[in-house]
Length: 220
Figure 1: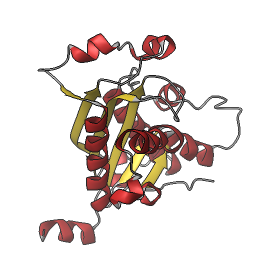
Figure 2 (figure 1 turned 180 degrees about the horizontal axis):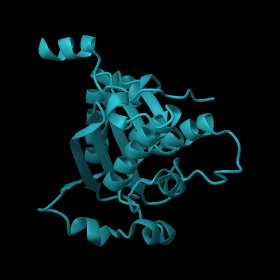
Figure 3 (figure 1 turned 180 degrees about the vertical axis):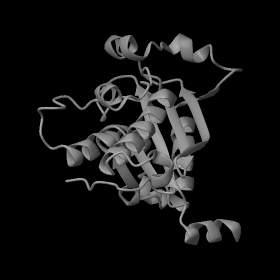
Figure 4 (figure 1 turned 60 degrees about the horizontal axis):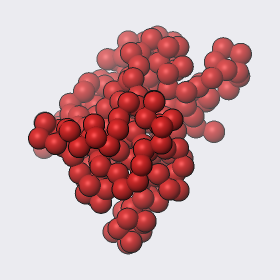
């Protein structure tokens, strides 16, 4: 059972992907979205795209609206990688934020986004991420779906816990099945969950730095 968070961690990184399909063992990510929040405020974000090495399933395309041609057309205006380049860039971002002590926030992020990343890296690069001295199990993860179950285990109020349903319940603007939009939505849902855990205490109070952390920032 996930624990209930009573404060927003100093540094959190929202993470989401859009993919060619739903099978983590064989599909590929075609876009990655990352957004960093420090003390509850957005400080950085990036979205990039990947030309996959296999077709995009029609059902997946109906969800995110991206074809391979759409992705190719983004060259010159957006970051577009091949599969190996996209994996390397995503791993670099996750490693960088792990080194800073960030919590990774997502929806079903361990079983889907991170697991697809792990399997795709091994399949495409031919090495395990452990061989690159990057142990995904060491990431600090907050899954907003699991966190919501910790807040309210019953099914009466919230029978469905997908990201869209959580956005609706917590009054957060949905991401629209765009990787960066969904990454931001997961962070905003998490912040509202923390507010709920504290009986509506203002968000800024829950994310404000302590005197100790302020001094640490000032001496950096």
